[in-house]
Image (cartoon, one colour):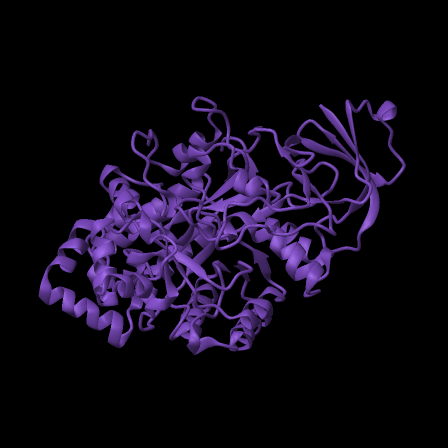
Length: 547
């Protein structure tokens, strides 16, 4: 089908000034981009004409930090992301996802990140390799294709678990080489890089030398490393410096995941991080980063535990919580010294809000902080923490209210910044960033606060992330590129999702086309599923189709 979009205000994703344009979509590609008033339906053979007067036409937005790995397959309509104008997502984040795996590793990962992605009964886990997972995203056998395009990072923690299990310890030389071989195979099957979760087990057990070997493999294949580094709290700058040194020493490009400076220790210190990054950039280190435009973070309640307490997986962790002596050691780490799982910071129970549970008997705790629950039940906060972890088998999701607005804005303006929602789509009360990130950038931060121009902000959300992903023909409104485009009203676009009511679609987005098919049409979801798995190719570029 040919669709002619006429009289649009074109913001093309390059950062260039807006201009008035006609754009022709022909099948899955952008066939023409010309001055407004140039094209007609009769001349182009367009079966449909959209008068875009007053609307901005931009590339589809690229979510550089998505946790849709499972929900793309479970909830195929994927309205939370399409309604924001997202047409491409980067999966496999924070070192934990579902490929590559063996049976035992898959079982452990499913439990470990249930608070991120759920763990649905009866779901068909019919893949084990990265290639098979990407094939599953492209299959039409179980409800049609996916709704957005998706690229994938091979998760370092999952790879480590497959080779070494979920326990602590350094790899033998043979295990190190085996992990590198697994990562090489995953990238040859289409992964675009590697992620880590260095405050999550088992990824956090990896020392710098171990990570360096993996990064060399990723870099040799033209991929990039996307770490959730060792601390966003106490020692955050040292943690960032470790990642930058890894990139410098191994030659592997670096993309800093949800690059924030959180907790009281880091209030007003974003400039120190940006100086560190700028110095490395000036030395030729290849660095980009992503952020979400909110103050609270989101994770699992079990992440607050010290790493040693999580060694060995769910059953081993629960056994430690049940043992009085070990439980006392955990409490000391969490409340006195600061757990490495909590970024080296002592747990502040009034900042930890329950956002979702696996056990229905705990549903009444959603929306309450650990301190609230402790006060209502006349218990110590740590005892509430341990009780919920035990009764929910570590499957509890939380919001962590630890951010600072001045840091968010300073990092957002950086020359390497891209947008990432870090959105968790499950739970009774998830973080609103899962539904509101991209409209919030464009409405609140660009239009209302004037922090960045519209052209610059769209570049942050499309052309710049496309360059990091080495997307073959996406991220810009340009002839010959894939027809991933968004039409929105620049005066009314805004996030409607709130912490009280997070599952609310944004205002102002009128049309979203994924590979030339309208997924949002005149503000309404069509149910179309035209997304593709995007795979790293042998030439280093990322494109749809089998490798």
